[in-house]
Image (cartoon, rainbow, N blue to C red; front, side, top):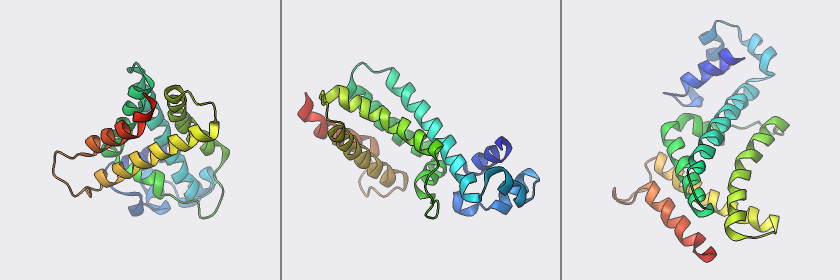
Length: 185
């Protein structure tokens, strides 16, 4: 299992997942495709396992970036910049997270837990910054922040900001966060 995921990870260093197939993965490790199906259950689940490893990596880096901060506002900024940096350093792995589809199948519980771990990191900081007790409101604020940061990150990684160099993805993220979070001084 790790051998296959390590090879998929190495592949994603230079190429998008669209250039990958079950047959290619099997060939990289000297297995037949049916062996990978026996181990993972399907090609979609193999890719989902890679998404899981990527989310684990991102969560670890996010927690490390926030550990050096002294306030919820600073932690939110650190988290947002970590997200942008991660996407820039790992564009194909990052794209796989959002482009992978389970073809209508529900996500397994293990994947839902990983997603929750990452979203909980942001919600914890939003709750600390805003002092809100309403879980729905905290979730809404955190999703607005994430959607904005994700959109800027997507445009920055794809080099589609269509602005001069002084208006970088990082500068746009700071602008978004500073203005959106200003109501909670």
